[in-house]
Length: 264
Image (cartoon, rainbow, N blue to C red; front, side, top):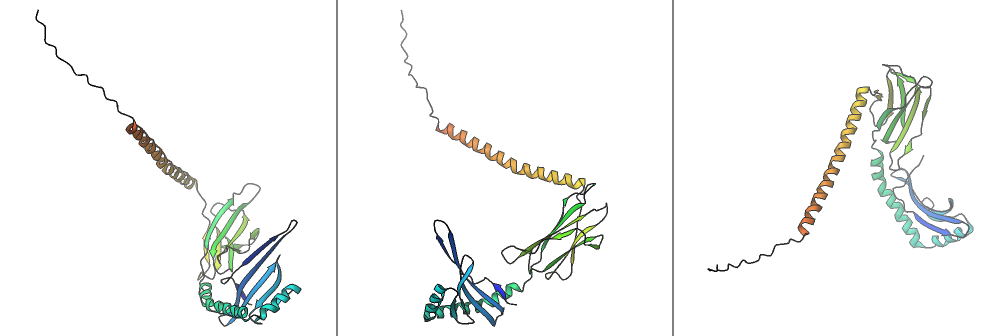
């Protein structure tokens, strides 16, 4: 099976609007390979998701799939410059393959989080969620354990969801009634792990809840006090500025004249 990799991709987008409809055209260049020696280079043109024509390095020429694009392809095939350009693009694919294979050969360990989504009540069991984030390759297995034994009832899982950067995430849910002291675990198997890794759910006690509340309050105060300090500092600076700008008035000194005493 050939794997498609978009490490050499040059999209060309064309938008054509009419009064009633809109047409969307785009081109995609991609490299397909099974090994560094088995490379296929494709340059494809689409309109409204329909393939109109393409260059295939296996054929070494352009092919059109409509009357108009067949004419265009015939003209391009007569142009040695276009054909030489596509041959160079195929070589670019080939030279990039070792880099891609090096990246693909490195597995990335998942970040796993196990939590209680909904607490159990008298009528409904609790809902647990096990999430694995940012792992590669795509293949992974999540298994629920109850006191070390596999639990398969009331389990639902998502597919491996691509993050868009060749890393994936997956989420698994189980509805289960847990008794005090009973261990609920999620076991993860992946190529990045030498052996299956088990993650246990740890219930949050009242003491733990209090610690979280105290920590949240401390964080809030740590954020509030600097803001208050900045406000007071700005007010003080503003007041001092106004005082400096206030004109200073001085009393005019009137000279005192000493009159000689009149001696009667």
